[in-house]
Image (cartoon, rainbow, N blue to C red; front, side, top):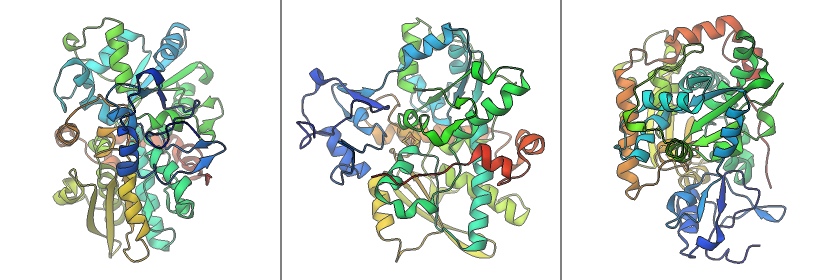
Length: 435
Ligand code: SF4
């Protein structure tokens, strides 16, 4: 047990997400405070061998006032990959586009998608793709899975599974609920699997030479990318995870003038996603997007306006509830952020029933992720970032995953149908109880 564990969170030397610089620590205890009050891990310690299990969310790094705790820095590994001559493919998570600008004195919520693509091209990207395509696939699979479970009545409530810190939280503290987790991989998990097993072949690239880098708001994705369940025929599907903070630092190091960059579009060699994929970055967004598609899949009709702006699932309350009618039944929804808040819901599930529960670990979802630019006014900043995503969704001509022609084509060409054998192989996963 580490010396100061009464005061601060212990960090194992091999933690893939975060590290501590000992000489900087002032023993203020803010890391343990956030871990106890928002994450619900400190105080409920579980051990894996000698080390305390960390769910890798990185909220302790976000609140550390002296940068003693930081993300694991993988920027040198990225530059080595670029310089090695491999084909480096970047995939960009939804919430990165509304926060990277803050690293360059731009406002929270300002959309910088085009500048980000331009910066990555200058860094040496072979391709830059939008992870919202992966998010659309997640919606197709997860909405179909929800419908199956509602029909059979099994393993309800369904839990979302795109937040790796939440998945590890369930595996560690509530293994009895593992069957409730959706078996869907995260959008990055789906997208990187398809890049290695489909895109590489389509482009005549040896998959071993394709180096997939996810740009994310999330340090827990550094842990997710190393999960053995997400290793494919050619090794890890996602080779490296770089956070917004790391990318901002790298752009500065390379002396790229971010603010003056001319917008560049995503590469068109691979599909892009819909507005439903964009709102994944905000708490309630995964559920809202999945409900839009579940409504269509069960009625054959376009969702009504109130489901295209599902206000009960939006905003900075950490537990939001709503109802929707699907298959002639009233389906009870609950969107949560903060795994401490999730504990309170899970502990009462026997008496307070839900059918579908979304949990994101970070404040207001990935917009408040552990790899996002640090901010002093967390609620105002994450709200501005979330509003940036909702605004982007409203402006998109395509707002429904099932209408995305490239999603339709992907199923036609190689995935057959949602929940087919091919979809299960490349887009779904399994979980394991942890000590
Ligand atoms: Fe990562 Fe988002 Fe989960 Fe935070 S909420 S741990 S950023 S996936």
